Length: 136
Image 1 (tube, rainbow, N blue to C red):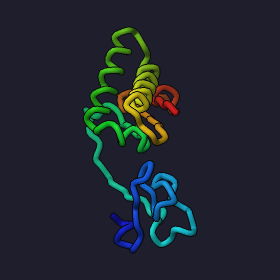
Image 2: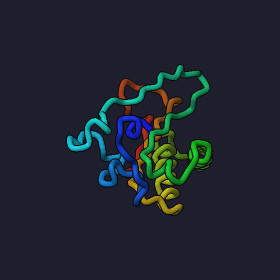
Image 3: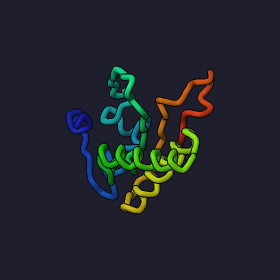
């Protein structure tokens, strides 16, 4: 919507493209498409709660084919099953991220798919060594 308000166009041709040439996910920094595309992030601050379990970050490739609730439910199920089978917290989030990535591809995602899950319940031992999982 911001691109359109600046006078630009977004076309849906093999994904959303600014002025029909540049994929939205790769548009930041392309000098020829300024002022339509800017590198100013949209920021939201959310207060954390004690019952927050994990943080999921993913690229459009996941969100194009899965709702927030579907992704959250699948990640939760994957981690629970992994823990039931004796997996560590670190292994469980890695498994969940991998399963979400594969699910997006299986659902026909045409965009790049990256999923990162951060376990918010893992004990912090001074480093991130046990609490994160990522699948490229």
